[in-house]
Image 1: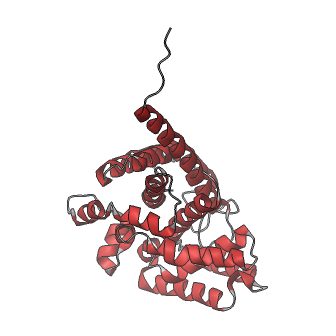
Image 2: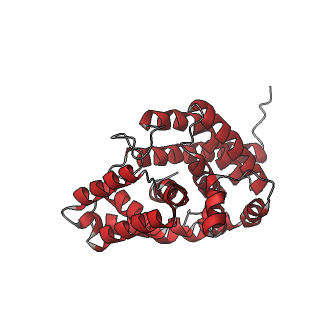
Image 3: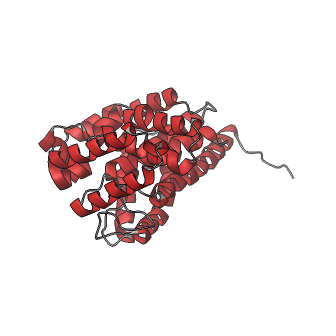
Length: 292
């Protein structure tokens, strides 16, 4: 009896699925790392609900469980070089699963978008055996620029909070950030994370440093939606002061970070966009520093 060996295309498909599974594990781990991080100004953690009355860490965990297959699916699509329309359809379906798992609470809409695109870009680069360098990942992300711009220009699409904020305050928003290859990830968060690690910070402190760098520099749509330009000026100014005084290398860094957290909770401010960008940054760093 003759045994039929897998064809070249079958072997390629098997490798793509294995790669997608590995990247998806990293994506979920990165979201979990962001969740357990503390102190984070106004954000949900395993310690408290932050500035949110409708969600807690358990809500986030239900959402994470519901999204685990999404990251594998979008990684596989990225490895195949799928067009933006296909990635978007996967994201819309994932959002529906998230809302079912959380009883309608939006825990990860921004992460579905940002982390999903970064996941697809990593798979697109790694499927050819190339290292996932910053430059290669940004080039891969720009492949979907046209699709992102088309969706942003579509007046028939349902307006999200982020889109309404972008129109009201004339900020670029999440789609503009993605269309430009996520400069907040590659030019702000990752350099801050790497520099803190090089200086001897443990991973948790380095992640806090990266988060504060994002808060100091990003026009977070969640903050603008909740408190307008005055709220944005407060969180950016306070984060900049935190960094100027040494960030996580100052002996009193924890007290100052917790003080900002309490103030953001009192003002009901939550820089969720920066949390999503941090998760994407942690994913890139995890992939770059671990063998896949």
